[in-house]
Image 1: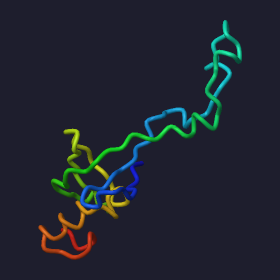
Image 2: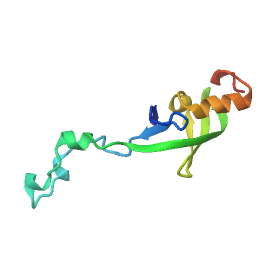
Image 3: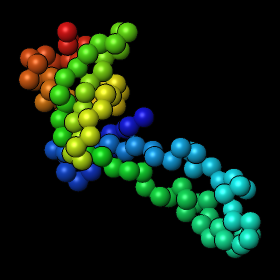
Image 4: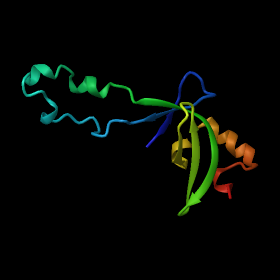
Amino acid sequence: MPVRTNNSAPEQPVVHIDTDSTGGADTDSEKDPLLGDEGNSESESEAEAIPEKECIIAGILRHQWSWSELMFEVAWEDGDVTWQDLTSVDDCLALDEYLKKQGVEKPSDLI
């Protein structure tokens, strides 16, 4: 699940998305059978140190309630548009701007 983190430009929040479907776990099947352990030069600590993909929110387009959960249609700077739950955008400047445009102070006030 995307999580907002701080960066040097607070006007454009950064969201990290874990793109590793294995959860970073090394398995013996990932090692090259011809090279043995020598072919796996990356240690576990190095693999865990690889940064997650950073995505910048361009804005929130709209919202909807889905089974009592508030969802937001998010436009990303790279052009993608996805639906995210409130916890994914809760600390983002884009949410503050969206709430202001909607004339409400809190997400729970959205209709």
